[in-house]
Length: 450
View (cartoon, rainbow, N blue to C red):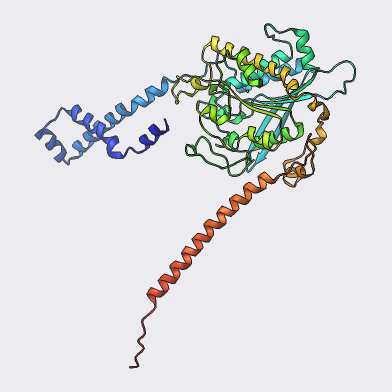
């Protein structure tokens, strides 16, 4: 499709006018000398006739594009909540279950652009004081605006956690025993500004409210570009963490210090833990492997790389929960979201069950290592300014090692070094040009006395 897009961009004005010229010819029914007479006419009437005939041809030729656009799949309002309705339903769910759920809104602003992210926390509160450490899980949904199905999955999981909905073949007593060990934070809609753009009609928009891909705005390999890099869709922003949304998510991750991170996307249906999930809930249908190997391209500046490399999350994953490979790449809603009731429910049921399997297997994968970590409290929350001032240099991870902010610093050093080299080359070029011009303009003085 990228090749097709590039070919379309190469069409010049002659290529665009040629079909219209043919329609002009057919519209007047002129051939041979009649056409020659028409072209030789210079009266206002002939010019007007030519213009209107060309305009008719232009509309006919280019009208096909509009017809194609109208055939694209719209948002199915019978299946999907609007962003506002979905967040209101989650708030109502939290209100009905204060013993299990809490709701927080975090806001941030940068250079006139503001964003807010809702964070829902699940923790079962027993009658007696429970000082046992919890296994911490952080889940993010809706990082790309066009992937509506991911936020619907967030709502389904919260409904099951609050026991307003139930999973088949799951023993309630076993579920309670599993959930007693867990502290779960969920971001149901990370990119609400981008989601609103999609709801307004731009169904292919994945970026945030000012055109930055939030999954390219993190510091690990920020700005690195592959050969198939798309500067429109994969705009990484002006700097790592330039966007309020990624600033908020970094703050949440650093303060929560999770054992499991999952970033949930759609676009395709995606090894011990994952193999078992694939067998139990995807019937071996989902792809498993490295992100680049599975989706067919390498991505840099992603949240999952940051969680694993910088936050040191032991198990950091990106899940692709749905994708229609047969859909046109321009039919974005159909490509990224189920469009019928049966597939919609299948995706939500299968992936809800998959996440509850993760809740059960996750602590077993780490053994007893997680029990050595203390339960995070709100006093660990720090501002972005404190982070950049070196807060992390003094902060110990659960492994007892110092967590340093060298990655962000090295990214900036590399950027400034490239700018320095570029400016040095330009200055050298200008200097050489002035010397060359000076030699050419200098008058030749004869050594022989006159």
